[in-house]
Every structure is written in structure tokens, then in C-alpha cells.
Length: 102
Image (cartoon, rainbow, N blue to C red):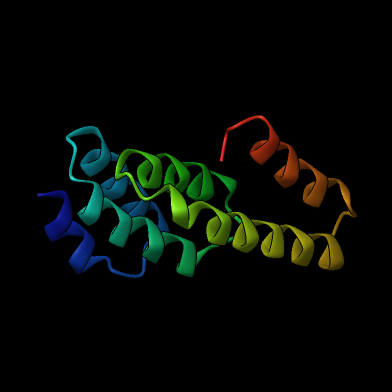
């Protein structure tokens, strides 16, 4: 049901995020990863997408992919800093990883 809606609203970050969230809850980690990756591609500046992606990757047993996700989140955090409010967001993203949130 959610996946069908996500194919219709394929460019909706919210729909992709919610579909990934639902699939993650029922243990469909590989399918959830596809949707959360699409949500990241649509709006990588939304912090929730990286937290959910981290959770899905861990549950899928693919912890070896976490450094790539971390680098991607830090890259976007750095981009936000350069474009808007300063280094705080980059540091905030780093703290997520240090505290195990991503």
C-alpha cells in the first residue's frame, strides 16, 4: 500500500521517508533502504533521513555501510554551514554520530 503510493509520489521526500519508516517497522530492511535512499536524494538536508537510514542499515546487518552514510551526512552538514547558519550544523551532525544517533 505505502510502496504503491510511493511510486505515484516518487518525488515526495515525505512519502519516501514514511514508506521507509513503515517497511523498517515490519522488518523489510532492503526495501526500506531503497526508499530512504530516495528520500535522501530528494532532500538530504532533512536530518531525519540520515537517522532513519542509519537505523535501517544497522538492522539490515550492513554496518560496513555506516561510514559512507556518515560521510554523506557530514558533507551535507558542511554544505548547509557554507550556505546558511555556520559550523553549528556540521558539529550537530558529528554529534549525532558520536552519540549513536546516526
